[in-house]
Image (cartoon, rainbow, N blue to C red):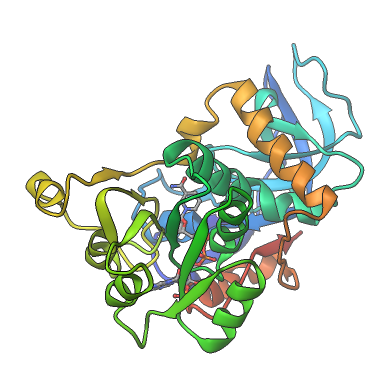
Length: 323
Ligand code: NDP
């Protein structure tokens, strides 16, 4: 089968299309033939070696497709069934992957394979951030960075569903328009304006109840400065680089702030949590309550270009690959 392999970490050019043996499903696994593969920012961290993985490896955590074969002991999954998955085990940038059966989500008829590969990981992330990390209340004002990105667009809509006033940041006027169209009450172009000052001005000097920050290094300080006393900072990603170590006394000095660094895997660790979050997201997509912006698919062979575009800040919504 074709797969995108990383034999040495580095820039997008290290992504190489190779022929490798099609995996065989071991006991408890299912072989999935991919029809759509999700591109996520974490893929760039793996590619660069920021999150080290033994070399060589096939990239990717998320895909949708059809069950091709089942391993020993697998029940309740049938050959031919449409499924999607997210797993921390890599290997999704390929025509096939052998995936633990308990990570599969059966796809309802009203969700396409491309929608599933586009929304599963980022949608469940937005879900746990808005419902569990900082459970948003209707009277809250929250700040969502990179509001036109994959997670950003979904989180903005979900935060609005929960009744919050949502302030977002984006880098361009076009992205600002898109963010507004997806529910942002206020949008700050953080490449032109000091966003912490703008947030203070928009909140009568008080600051927001929670900041959802997937940008990391460049926004961290400003995010803490955007919070009101007792506010919560969810630092959930590092698109601009990793956040340096933080002195705990800084949290006290700025008003007994709460800081957390969450990761999706811990919020879908049980089968019931996985099904609950995935089910909620797919239901909202099917009913039209959650809009998923999917860019025209890249071919699997063009994975490097997808990475260049994602890291170049030129993209909005979700990028997917098709084998
Ligand atoms: P996005 O589509 O949001 O792309 C990243 C965006 O970050 C860019 O479009 C850009 O938006 C913004 N950005 C700001 N500074 C930079 C920079 N220096 N270089 C590149 N981009 C920058 O990606 P995803 O939706 O896939 O992921 C968003 C974040 O969420 C990532 O940090 C990712 O790792 C994290 N994540 C974390 C999870 C978790 O459980 N902890 C799970 C899923 C994702 P703009 O141009 O508007 O500034």
